[in-house]
Amino acid sequence: MNVAFYEKLWMWAAGVLIVAFLATIAVGVAGSALQPPSHVETIDPTQVFKDPRFAHPGVTVDANGATVVAFGLMYGFTPPEIRVPAGKRVTFRMTSTDVTHGFLIVGTNANTMLVPGYVSQFTTVFQRPGEYLIVCNEYCGLGHHLMSAKLIVEEAQP
Ligand SMILES: [Cu+2]
Image (cartoon, rainbow, N blue to C red; front, side, top):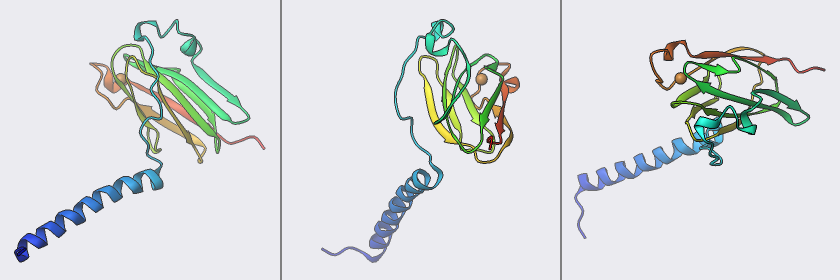
């Protein structure tokens, strides 16, 4: 079979691009710990306040790390201030009571959507103590720009 030089060149170029695109996924997963959601958990968005999983929003700390239970609603996060220990595994469990919101902790790799009807969960570790801004990064309505919260990463007790 006779394949023209330029056709071969473009086929190789396309092959190299495919490998490059797959490599960016591999680098994202291995290097930056970017992962798709690990599980699917549903919730009735009209019953979030009554649901036992979200009845007590806040932080629970135990020997393995911390669990944060929170939800987004127009136009804020509950709780508005979250305190977690530095250097420990922190699992966030969140949902929305109304429309789709975003949950981005600025300057970290913590970033998820809060979709009504679903529980968003991810685990991360905050190494640097300090104060971090949490913003909604999914346009959710007229008060979207007001929707923020605070994450305080506290130095681990010696
Ligand atoms: Cu929002």
